Image 1 (cartoon, rainbow, N blue to C red):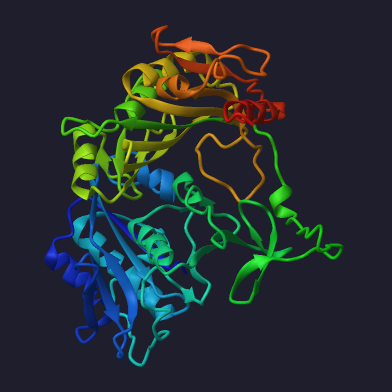
Image 2 (image 1 turned 135 degrees about the vertical axis):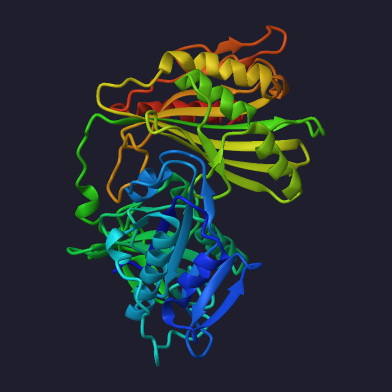
Length: 472
């Protein structure tokens, strides 16, 4: 049985409904709240958590339950309530299922997974106990060592939920890695993949043939010295410490699906009238014909797209940075992560964006110069890199090899061009000259690159361009 159970209800679970769910372990079960009362826990006799329940979240964005759970949710708006059971305790998993079943019976809706929420009967937990702290100190953490925190997930898509985001922050503050362990059928949300960048954080995939492997690199892993780490190949040497690659990771088939991946940074002068998110919306409109569908500070993205609300959240959190996820409609899959931070240069927006295209659908490459010009002339673009990847249309990250992105273009903002000495920005080693964007007196430059997913020479051209621009 899964460790996570999610109730998707038509009506908000009011206090009496939540209380009925919390009584799933009987009237004498210990209850506590943590995280400024945002999480309610059902505890064992020693006060250690059996089930942790997140505050209900109002989801106003269509398609999020389908994207993250493969489940059919009530029509938007609906309420999303998560219950996470402590790993390895059958009674805890049954408690989570009964909690969700009671919410559904009173507030209407459905549960994921459906089989977990079939009974509303009281679960007998007398004498049941769980792991002592610190392993059970946070509901997201299943194991803790002096090197890493381990999270075990059994969901269709590992998403950047509020509790997983908290786990990332907690491990970073403690200078630990975060290792997410999943079954082979699980995928990652791009928001989670983009956060698993620092060693020893990694995605650990269970595998029948090789035991465990890294879902992003394919390296075969073993639990050693308090964390999952790569295994050395039999013929490895100190000069060539090679690692075997899992056979499952290499099972790649080109389905014809593609992704258009765009990463860019804008730097705005700090101003009380500044409205954030406009650059991302402009890109979205130019490439899809519509604005983003929704956004949030975690997944699922629960709020309808709003520049003003996004700006207000970032302003309230300043000078601390703000991280948000932005999603598109199911008809044109799109997902972006945005990090907003206050720096000496102003207010920076770092955006990583991808759109998915099926076999027979062509990414709108012809629109890219126009996109770059809009960002350069209206949104204080600093730089932008555009790539095409052989990857899934739904944007989910599988534990399999996907073709690397191939650069389509690089864009240098007008201020960066102006600060570059001489004609270095205009005279490059590339076969095609850069295209000027904006006014001739203060242009940004668009550098076309091959962009053919079957030809990796585009990276060689990109590296040559970067060395040239840096004066190397």
